[in-house]
Image 1 (tube, rainbow, N blue to C red):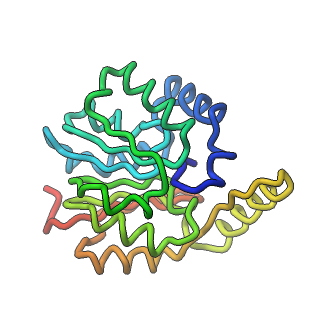
Image 2: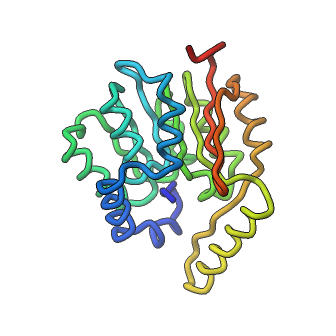
Length: 217
């Protein structure tokens, strides 16, 4: 899971984990659900498109969309280690001048962050206790498209997350993961004027894109 701003995240999303994510990306490309999200965002990609990637980790979505023609990206993340690796990756890909890096909790930095054509939160809502604030503030910055990867709201997913959290407690880690109401997420997004346009699922994850357009094509 990629990080979003919270002190507890740094103990889980550390340098070792960031480098492991980087190496897996180099070997295999984006993870399955990230690929799904990128495929669903493809109809919205255009030259000069702007991106706000919240909890973007090592910057995989940023790199992929910038190489596809996006003009500029802002990557917000709460893990200094992940941002350090993201900068190195951007430099390696010759994209450093097209990505702005913001360290911290997005909900506390949101007022200083401009809207973007595309806003993404890839496995981030599950990292944050206050989904209402995170979704409300982030969707307000989506000029055209809002893309999410979040846990499916069902009993098996809640059991899986409970087991993860038990392991964190045993390791004396403050970090906790969450399964928020997907119906409530949809309500918050709809209240901002966006409509659900595409949705895909895995056993654990829901991959969804909303937009402000009458159609995608």
